[in-house]
Length: 66
Length: 149
Image (tube, each protein chain N blue to C red):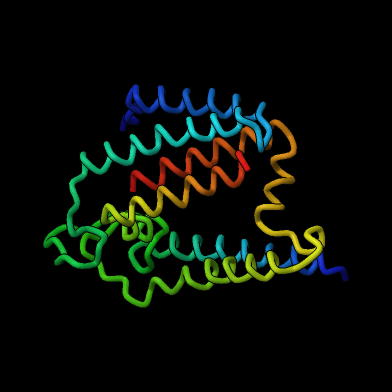
């Protein structure tokens, strides 16, 4: 078993956990906050909105320009 | 029951995003053209953020600070006004915290090929024009989604 395989398996487990949480949240509407609720909460104030936009900008710059 | 048609501006925006993504697919990182196309992607999302915020004046909804609105019960998947989620935010802490922690662990690891980070895995997708364009389009969609919640 290589370190690369272990790393990729952990990434896969984390991705599955994220998708699983999404399924759980969708299966019981109103019981758990959705990703939309999380973003709404973060962006409820101008400062939060600016922070979210800046993080999104950095993501694009990092991924596609640098 | 008739389906509502998307407003014209949505179609115009989607068309512009497709054109920008096609242009982005032909660029390579560390070039002026790549920087220009990413900067061009910033503009519509920032404008959308400002316009969207002005159309929907801040209310107590979703902030967890205001009182619930009597007689209003949200449908499935809709936000519950004034809802205090409290510890239930924790459901997202496990996967998101795990991803953040594992990113740090893999980033500290060496060589990169043995310890792929999210960035290095995205590089593999970015290697083809199609993957690069699709990833760019996904990034634009994410930005629009984030600022219109």
